[in-house]
Structures are given as structure tokens and as C-alpha cells.
Amino acid sequence: MVEKTIHEINNRIKDGSVRVVTAEEMVDIVTELGAEGAAKEVDVVTTGTFGAMCSSGVWLNFGHSEPPIKMQKVWLNDVEAYTGVAAVDAFIGATQLSESSGMEYGGAHVIEDLIRGKSIDLHATSNGSDCYPRKVLDTTITINDLNQAIMLNPRNAYQKYNAATNSSESILHTYMGTLLPNYGNVTYSAAGVLSPLYNDPTYETIGTGTRIFLGGAQGYVIGEGTQHDPISNFGTLMIKGDLKKMNPDYVRAATFEGYGTSLYLGIGIPIPILNEKIALSTAITDADIVTDILDYAVPSRDRPAVKQVTYEELKSGSIEIDGKEVPTSPLSSFKIARKIAGELKDWIKKGEFFVNAPAERLPTDTVCKPMKQTRETPLVGDIMSTDVLTIGPDSNLCAAARKIMESSFNHLPVVSKNNLLVGIVTAWDISKAVAKDKFDMLEEIMTRKVITATPDEAIDIAARRLDQNRVSALPVVDKKKHVIGIITSDDISKLLARRY
Image 1 (cartoon, rainbow, N blue to C red):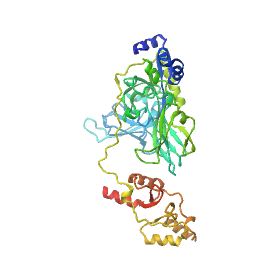
Image 2 (tube, rainbow, N blue to C red):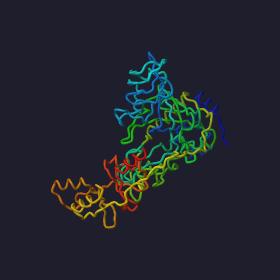
Image 3 (cartoon, rainbow, N blue to C red):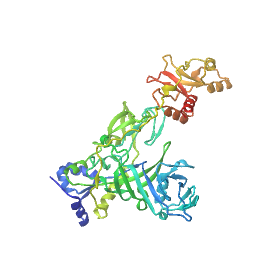
Image 4 (cartoon, rainbow, N blue to C red):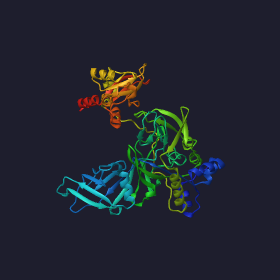
């Protein structure tokens, strides 16, 4: 039985005799020597990950102006930062968007610009007081002008991350990237074999106080991250580090189309090999790591799993869904994760980085609960009109116009003989056709790609779909694509008027 201490390992780091390998290299060592032999041979295993970590941000202290101001609102390059803690402290979050540039620029970009030494425009406002009389402040700063710039991220380095796909007929823009319709692609994140928490799944060595590689500098784990859910293998870390010492190669802003900004961040965690159990944990392979592919076409917290796959399958470039080969693509960079693990390995070998035992173990029995909602969310089925009129594709424009005149709807779902939705025609479509002296059958002018809703969807989801697709009504269909109702923007407006 092998037993080593942190003190012994650090002494080997000091005298240069330490044996350090990456988690990727450890796989072959354990295969060759077994867990006990590997534990004797290896002192530290390094891990690495580089991916989009939305739950990131930085605390900034600007120093006091003359005359002084208590910042009640502050913007950095037109991105608002939170100031509700003190006079000249602010927290800028990675996903906060610019008020002028929208999704093209956000808090993540401000953070990267600071690291790169770029000038940042600061605008602050206040009501003013006897001790803080100034009401408006405009200045330009760089990172060197700040007293502190402390990265403090509430939730990073997920232990497990689901993959994503899209069963609907529309493109979806998500934090998992752009998802193509009809299972057109699968996206995934995390570094697999190099992922920190996969290599220490029971948190034997990773906990409060663990020294880590963070953004190219030394940082620390300061506790479990928000939404820490080890029961479901979704552990997370809360971490901190000095932004002034970080490297922009490992801290990069990104914009996800239709979603917003995020921060790509490099994290590497050393795992001291104290015994053969820990050695065995660090020999995990991509074939051992399993995750679910979730269907993001379902706008719900509890998205259905389409399939369970390994990271080996995801990294192969394609997987099979319903007999179809679907391309897979990573949102994280395994190349940079490997570079992080290698750089951390070099730091340790050179005696520039020492390992330490956590001051406190991360909890292993917590779960992430859903939000408590005291107001019931109305569903589409609660307010949709069920007396919707439909029409067949072989009907002519005159029949359609007559139906619209006889009803209160400006939209007619076009259905087949067995009530399957095949298109939709509006009063505007009919007007355009008449203006062009076209009196063809409806199948010649109807819109075939129909945006729909289901009765069990929340009204908020239907409202967003109306807005995204710039339509004013959605046919409501059941699981067999039969038309059972219709919901319009007027229906939603009336509901909101009653609620507020």
C-alpha cells in the first residue's frame, strides 16, 4: 500500500526529484504499472480545461476621485458593472452586455481588454452626499491604474457537462452554440480526459484553498461553486485569482450568436498522488466519461436526453442519432487544455508551483434545486383559442378570404385531410396575391415552414418564439402534429395586461 504526504511531495519539488505527468499521460502509466505502481512512480498529475465559463467576473477597485464619488452606477466601455457594495468597488460580470453594442461586446471583452493593457472608458453617476459630493465622473483607466483587479468566479470547471442537439425544424442559438435543425449537429464542452474534477471525482485533493493554474497565473479554489451538485456528478468550483498577473492567451472573450457574451478561461489543477486510489482516479479515459445529449428544442429545465455517449464518441467527430450520422463539434479547446496541463507540469518541475492540501473538503452530498416559483406560469393551452378555423391546401383564395372574413382570425392553418398541419396562410398573403391578380390554390401561396407551439409550453416561450420569428400567431399542435388551437400576440398581450 502506497501512502505519501503533501510535505514529501513538496520536498521533491524543492530538490527537483519530483515526477509530474499530465492526466493524459497517466492513463498509460496506470495501464502499464497498475494503480499501486503508478502511485509509487508519480507524485503529481496535472489537469487542464479551456472553455466558455459564463459564471465569471472581476472585482475592481478604482481608488477615490477628487472630489470623491460614491458610484451608484458605473459603466466600463458602456458595459454596466455592479456597484452596490462600496463607494469605488465594482463587479463586472462576463455576460453583461454593452448598452450600445448589444451582443457584440460585453463584460468578458472588458476583462480581456484590461489584461491586454488597453484603455477603458469609465462613466459613473451618483446622487451625491455630504461625504461624496460628486455626481458624475468620466475618466479613462488601464489595469495598472486599479488598486485591485481580482477575478472571483462563482461557478467554473463543471465536473460534468451535457452535450446539446436540436430536434426542431428551426435553428437554435444557445450557450451551447448554434444548433442546426433536425439533429443537424451535436455540440459539447469540457476537456474529457484532462478535466480537473473528472480526475478527482470524490474531491480527495481539490477543495477550499487548493492552489491552481488560473488564466496563466496562480489562483485558488475558495469553495464549492454555485449549483454544486455532486449527487448528479455536476460538481463546480468557486475560484479566485489576480487579474493583473493573468495571460490573455488563457482569458478570451467570446460572443455566441443569439445568446450573448461569455469568457473562455483556462484552469489547471494539480492532483497530488497520495495513494493508489487517487492514482486510479487520474487514469480515467475519454471512453470512461459518459454524458447525455440533451434536446434543446424543448424549452424546459428538464430537457429530454436523446442519447448517452462517451467523450471518445464525441471526439470522434460524429455519432449516430436515429440511424443518422450527426457531426459533433467541441465548444472547448482540447489543444489549449493540453497546453495548460503541460505548462502547470513545467511550473511544478521547475519548483515554481507547490501543491497543498485543501483547508476544507468540498461537500459531496448537496444537490442543485430548481427555483421556487410562487406564481403559477400560464401555459399555451390555458389561453389558446380552440375554435380555430382551418382550410385545406386544395382550396382557393376566395374560400380562404371568406373564412377569414367570417372569423376573428387573420391566420388560417392549412391542414391535410387527416388534420396534419402542412402550412399557414394569412390575410396579408391573400391581399398580396389579389394585388398580383393571382387566384391560385392555397398550396401555391401558403407558408410551408410553420412556426408552432404546443399546449404544455409556457406562455413566455411562445411569446419569445413570436418575437424571434416576427410572426403574430402560432398554430398549436399536439404530439401527432394535429392542429388543436391557435395563439396570437393579442392573446398574450391581453394576458399580460391582466397580470400586471
